[in-house]
Amino acid sequence: MTCDPFLKSVNSMPKTLSFTLLVAVLVFSSHQKTYCAEQTAQTKPAKEPHYQIMPRASRDGIGKFYQDREISQVMGHMGASWLERAGRQNEERPDLLIDSLGIQPGQIVADIGAGSGYFTRRLSAKVGQEGRVMAVDIQPEMLAILRRSLTAAGISNVTMILGKETSPNLPPNSVDLVLMVDVYHEFSFPHEMMTRIHSALKPGGQVVWVEYRLEDPTVPIKLLHKMSRQQVHKEATFQGFEFVRSYEGLPRQHVLFYKKSSNDVPTPTSKP
Ligand SMILES: C[S@@+](CC[C@H](N)C(=O)[O-])C[C@H]1O[C@@H](n2cnc3c(N)ncnc32)[C@H](O)[C@@H]1O
Image 1 (cartoon, rainbow, N blue to C red):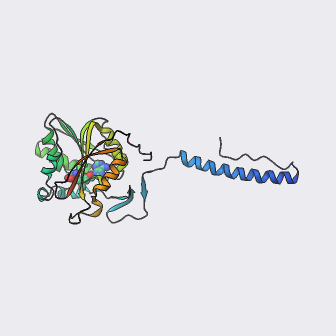
Image 2 (cartoon, rainbow, N blue to C red):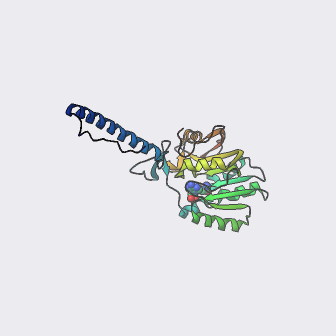
Image 3 (cartoon, rainbow, N blue to C red):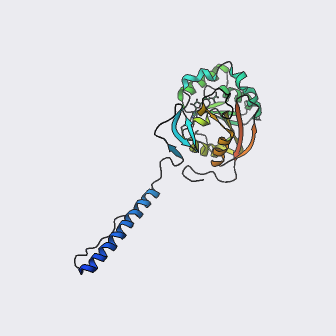
């Protein structure tokens, strides 16, 4: 069917009949136009169906909302030295975080948003020579910093991956555990990223959100770089994940474990 209404000439008809017919045809043709416009809108995929874009971003945000949360700006590679600061050990207790993950030697673990490699190096020791860490970041400069830190530490069981804003570029069904430390709130396409992470997980695999506690005003981190448990849960379940357990023994961060739920994950264009 085309979208042009079909109008026949009414010139040759009696005047009253032709007027009635003209009104009928005009009403029908305007209905056809509306219907065609709706059809066009339905068949043309919306550009970013899961997001709301605001005309103005807040100071640390990008003006784009997902599940009622404004997405934060990405921490630039110029801040890499902050990730490696000496005080981090006491402030965040990365040793407790790594122990809470229950990693077994030989496992394949993805470190999404690896940054300078602060956690990549610690994960590398846990998986051992039989295992592997897939270190993903979207900033080539961060991967260059990471490469230098791995070389300095003599680490050889890490694969570095340049990710995209919409994908970690991990093969399907390839990882036992996905760790996301202080990065998920920066994903500019969280729905697309998590859909791909969902498919990268092996059966029984888990994904771990580590986020600064929004509920605790004493945690000295910018608001958009913090998340509440409730917000993580809202987004994770929307993305097709199921809550497994949490670890709340860190001074500043939630550690929230999810697995693939038995329901199918929504595709990037589908509704909940
Ligand atoms: C605040 S840093 C945290 C680095 C590291 N996880 C840590 O705790 O030391 C966030 C990192 O995530 C990266 N990032 C942001 N969005 C990303 C995405 N969609 N995929 C992969 N990395 C991303 C940034 O480039 C940055 O290096």
